[in-house]
Image 1 (cartoon, rainbow, N blue to C red):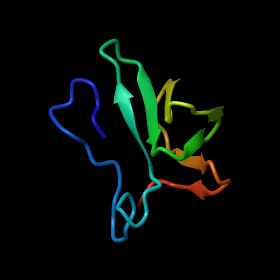
Image 2: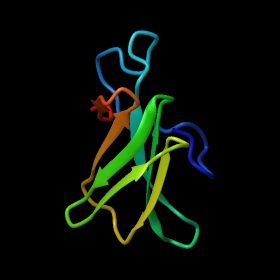
Image 3: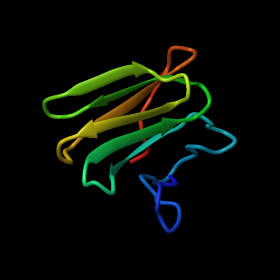
Image 4: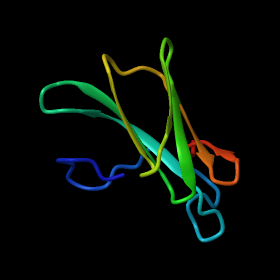
Amino acid sequence: MLLPSARGPQRTGGGPGRSCSRFEQDAVAWTWWRSPQGAEHLLAAGSRRVTRLIARGPDWSVDRPAPDRTLAVERPARAVVRVEALLDNGGRINPPN
């Protein structure tokens, strides 16, 4: 993932498997980002077949259509989150571990 003011790409997950390859092209990723003003944001992005992005925290949730395959949500503090994406065929995907 490329973040504003980052010195280079940041890896947000990964592991063994074929995720985001020519064999498995559907992918979703997320990361935390702090604005220059100090506000925390959850940023998520998906591959071309993603139509909706869902994020859940301990006491909040966001479920939005994502025509541009991105999601940015300001949160008061970093927390454990779960991100999920819905595909145009009704399938669901999660970020790699």
